[in-house]
Image 1 (cartoon, helix red, strand yellow):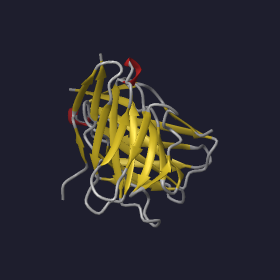
Image 2: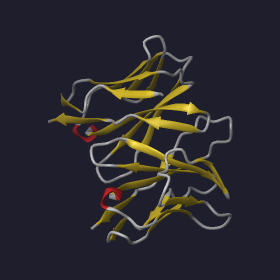
Image 3: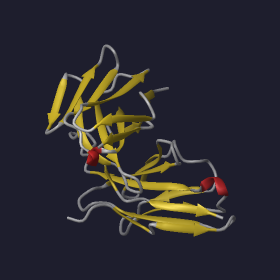
Length: 111
Length: 116
């Protein structure tokens, strides 16, 4: 069955540095991959989507890469700020109308 | 345009009671998904519905759990005879998916169910 792994449960990064989160998957070739942000007590919020034929996608301070050979996506936040502290979830499509989520990585940006 | 609405936000039930969780999707969205999230766990898919149809219920426990999305009104996730293990946050998401989009999902704030 499809499996998603996000690199670590928690990540501490100094303010101003680049935070890099990893999402690995097995047993599947998704057509696209999504990243969401979740704050405590709230529902996830969609951030970015990257298609299988795209190597990189950017949105303001966010950058996502997608390596279908390595079966890996990297999520970068540049010039990180304490307000970026949250849990970040990656999700991949199982079929056109269904996605599955990783467990998430809790990111703490230290002032 | 109001976002996805869920109510109640918090629900406390005693073992053996029934829990009813409601979800109103975003206007224009006809696809509803329910997920369960335990503390320190990821989102687990439960069921996917379109109006009056259950498309995929592969994540639903075989007993006590049911879901519906009627022609009129919100989607309902119903848990009968709740047990302590049902305590979790239940999230609803809606999608404008039309076969040509990439299924970006819009989540509600969740219902936190506590079973005493």
